[in-house]
Image (cartoon, rainbow, N blue to C red):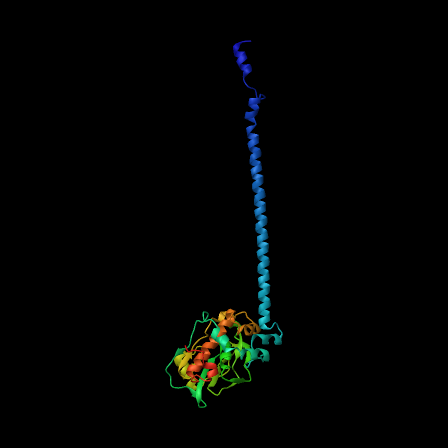
Length: 313
């Protein structure tokens, strides 16, 4: 055999191991490509399922929220039941407070009021220079508020505690709440109450109920012309306003009304006198400030059993 023929026969054939390794590269790459494509498709399916489940879950949450909103609206609107609509508003004079609760609120120890921390108070009474404000021959504490008002609702708790140290109510203030669309804060009302004290008079004016009337509320009481003039001069008719005999005024709640949002009347009452709770401490501290203010502005520090040791602002 010639050398040329030997060289020809020595060329690798397509069946030789070297040739097989070379020509099998494309099928292997194709398999890997197909595997990658399959993995991508599987991943896409997983993502799609996740997105679908998320949409279903979100839709369920939205549906639940819609149902809750419908139920709330139905409850507030009365849901076709006239008796249920009464829960949205309070009678102007409120509903009776259990004797155990009113008895507790009127007998908070002075030592508890003195010990209350003042860190939660944000407003304090301020001196004014008006002519002496009096009624029935005694210094007068004038209060102008509104039953819908959440700020008034907040301060009335401390007012009731403080006023009870100097006199008595008959009948006791009823239980109401600020307007539903204004915080729905449980509180007391001074409407249709009579306060008796040997030291001063208390003149409460609740200008409206908490019953909505268009963009405002149903009228209840009107200040006299003289009271109206003082109120406009000092606050431009904002609530609440307390005038301590023409010497001192308070133009807002002493602590933040949002503390009372979402609380029940019973819960708030249970915390009054308990300085280990924020609400109790703030009501007690506010009541102490009111007692101090009454002692200095209205009673000439009488009775000594109340005013002695309370200090003055």
